[in-house]
Image 1: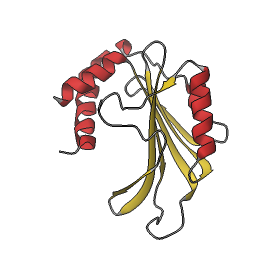
Image 2 (image 1 turned 90 degrees about the vertical axis):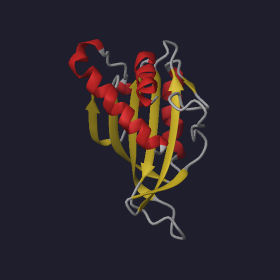
Image 3 (image 1 turned 30 degrees about the horizontal axis):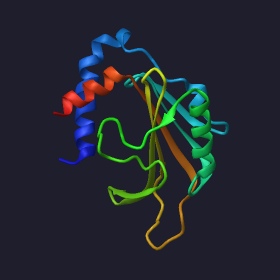
Image 4 (image 1 turned 120 degrees about the vertical axis):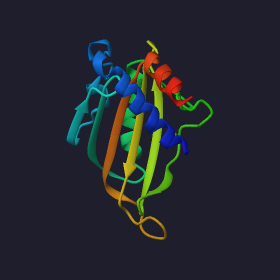
Length: 163
């Protein structure tokens, strides 16, 4: 099973286990820190310890978006991580984009994680989807942004569910 499928399965287990404990899962996401000016189609949820997704106009490689997110997070005391917290040995693509294919659609994805002083981790996923990138032009247009906040106890529960 791929690591992404393991993560999805583990997240479902954690979400189901926490379903009746919504009051015990604090929302740790500081939306003003990660919601950038010009955002559209904003959706918030209480998944994990808070999540937000939105679209924003950007051109590949979205350096301005990455820089603004990084500056906002660092201003709040967050430090970028070199490895994903759930898959300890897997490097984040904090400095690069990766081409992936799902259901016949090629997408450029970028992920990064930052840890706050209280241990909260913000996972950021950026994606240019539905673009023909193999031998074609670089993706431009709408960038999908997703941010999830994880407390250490949520991270521990996901890791335990993956075993």
